[in-house]
Image (spheres, helix red, strand yellow):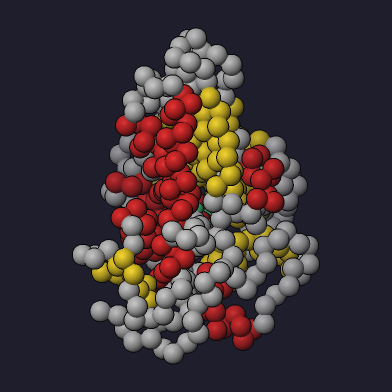
Length: 379
Ligand code: AMP
Ligand code: MG
């Protein structure tokens, strides 16, 4: 049952989109770049690269002729694109068919039924909220909206009163749900749901499912830098896909990962941010302080064996948790299925200058492995 509303303000139905703005596309394309063979492979049809704009970012599909499916790569690209667009349609904060838009415009006490896919993502978001002790919180919208993450060098700081008021309207525990009816409601007015840290990853998983269903073994799906690297790059012999972690300031590739059948997601402080009093603040909000992150984590890349949703949520949550707590989190979750095979690479800005790299993973026995190194001199 819903708790009574507190008589607060009615939410603004047209809020800023949580996904990354188009303006940032050229940078995003470099954020995590992959290297694929171009040209023909001599099997069914030709390799297809499909690029399109969705979720206010850019998606890219690479379906090789040797995908493993009997369907042509262009038909497969159509199916994968439709799957990604469906997630956008249901979970964007704007748009006629969006469950999230509807949810963000109801008052406390009103319930809405959502699509089963929206339900799944919302339940996953709440699960990540619980698992991370609240570091992941899909209700940070009211605070996020007070800041402008427009990369300005002299960004404004909101009024303390407005910030205090917004903080009161954050808290995933105030999102009410009714499992049987797949219905959602709010315990308080003025709240909003923002799936910007998890929905892109889910859309990648949906596209991967659709492709697998059609017999695809090898392909790349990329929605705004959240990826699924399916199978191998066809060739003689086939090889692992190669993807790069971007240098957070210089824009070139810091490190290349060679991966097969892995999801990869990155949250970086070089995407949406502003600088205030010389300090960089990024678009991830620490729900504990109610402020944008500024703790010197330049990027978090998460590799996951089966779920891009998990990689996406984890990259955002680990940005909030920071290196030590991320290590603890991975260790404590070692028996949980979702973190088996998980790998987190955190690039931090060192106070004395330069960057450091920390990698956390689990070995075969489920024990935490930590590797640390310095990687550069120019923060
Ligand atoms: P990502 O780029 O996947 O790390 O997602 C960042 C986006 O997620 C932001 O632009 C917000 O819309 C949303 N967000 C910000 N802070 C949080 C948080 N602590 N938990 C969940 N979502 C967040
Ligand atoms: Mg994320």
